[in-house]
Length: 155
Image 1 (spheres, rainbow, N blue to C red):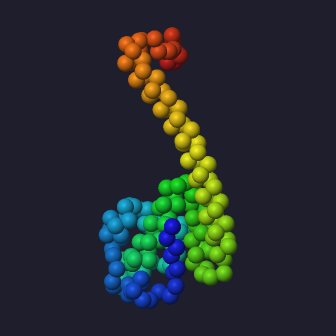
Image 2 (spheres, rainbow, N blue to C red):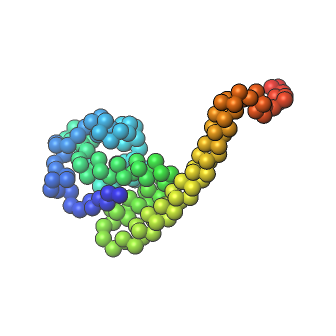
Image 3 (cartoon, rainbow, N blue to C red):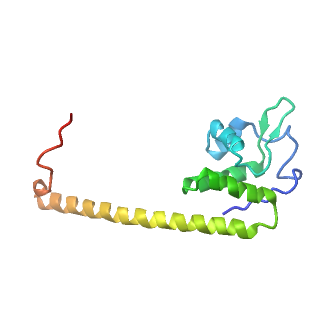
């Protein structure tokens, strides 16, 4: 997983506020909505303040896009916003908290692995049902498959 080092707000990763991408272009490049980008900023999920033009418009840089990718992937794997915020704060704080970051990621990995195991178990049931239907259809006796004899009242 990408680890972003926010470092100073200068250099190639972060240039002046007049350069960079508009919020619309950042949304297109990251695959998240403009609303989500604004939400991430309000919710404290970004590791560095988003640059602004003289007119107050957001300007996104490579560092911002990379971090948004981290956030969206963590979110896609079920990490709560509260935990992403905690992780963002640790990263923003810089060096010295790497053990906390590692512990956070290891705990999340364990959660994801447990979810994957549950999904795998559910997939095995689905595969079994598919095999039963295919077998019964091929044998010509699909009408013998169990069906409820009565449906619950729809009151």
